Amino acid sequence: MKKFIIIISIFITSILLYMYFIGNSFLNIKEYELKSINENFKDLKIVQFSDINYPFVTNMNKIRNVVNQINYLNPDIVIFNGNLLNSKINDNQKESLINELKKINAKYAKLYVYGDKDSLNSANILNKANFKELTYEEIYDINNNKLILANKDHVDKYTDILVSHSPDEYLNFKSLNNIKLVLSGRSLGGLIRLPYLSCLIKFKGAKTYCKDLEKEKDTNILVSSGIGNNKLPFRLFNHPSINLIRFK
Image (cartoon, rainbow, N blue to C red; front, side, top):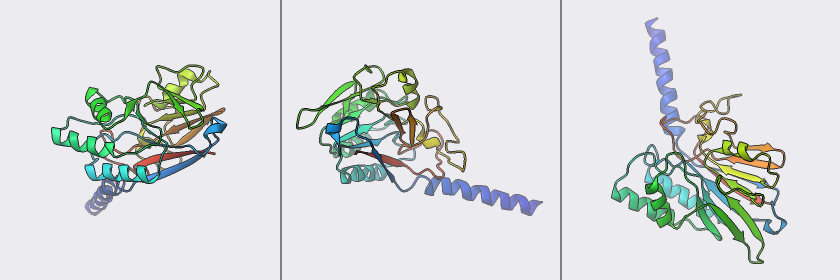
């Protein structure tokens, strides 16, 4: 019996170590080819990332890697879906974060929405890093064609893309046929994924939609798995990731 308990203890410890060190390592780039919302915006590239939750588990090296990968993808629009910070940070950490996020390049815009943990401190960092809070944004291409993005408080009958922290916000707008794409975060992909249990841990605001790409009629709902963690420092079969959306 004692030997059995030791074996079980070693097994559980090994799994937890794997979930902490391996689960939180690497950075997946998930690519999605979606039908263009507007024929004039074919080949548009949007990079979406979310839930950094710095400095919990996420260190500056991981953030540098995120920045480098985003720039490598050469996006037209970059969207951050909220939850920049997980706890208080000092002035040096704040400056490092600003300097790194400032390096992110986008052809048209760098936009963000508030997460449930974000405060004015998060907004201050993002603003100084040349991100703009998204309320109602009209993106024009070189031929003056227009694409409209809005947060949950500014959606109207002209909105093409809803950008929110919580994917379940879309439930309030399902009756609108004009929203073709929802970009959100919050869920962290459920942190732990197992066969037939793709979102083992569900957070408030991401219980209906919690994983990758889902579809409601003509609307694509894309949920970022995030960069960091929320309270639990573990991930399983669900590495940190950023999303690349290509309009075709």
